Length: 149
Image 1 (cartoon, rainbow, N blue to C red):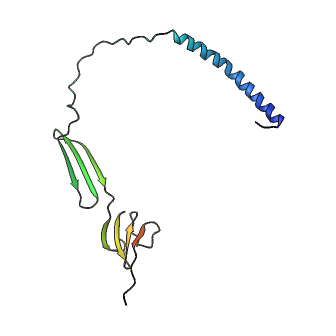
Image 2: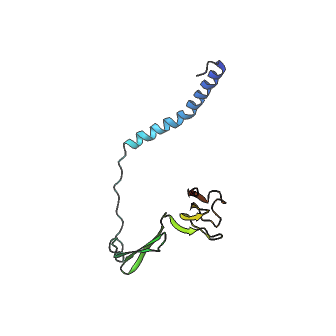
């Protein structure tokens, strides 16, 4: 606490005001807790029996899971039960694929690798820009070497 008597007086006044404001609430809470201690919870009362419903589905079984690979980065899982498609999940795998020499204007996707000016570059985000021209879109993966003499 501060050594300044003015600050100490303010802190003391705030402390007294908070205690005075909370005291009625504290007393009421004690009264409620005392009254609740003598109560016993009532047993649940069941309601009337309703009409029978339609039969439910048989468990969470699966008849077939089909996996399709698109030859690039995509894999699709199709879950079937009783001849009905239950769900389909498509995933794009983070694979590096070499696309050869860079072709200007072509769309390259994240993970594609190309050769440009004798170096290999990795594509970080979908782009049509050339390696070295787009900040953040390409990363130099293998730098070209010196010509042999």
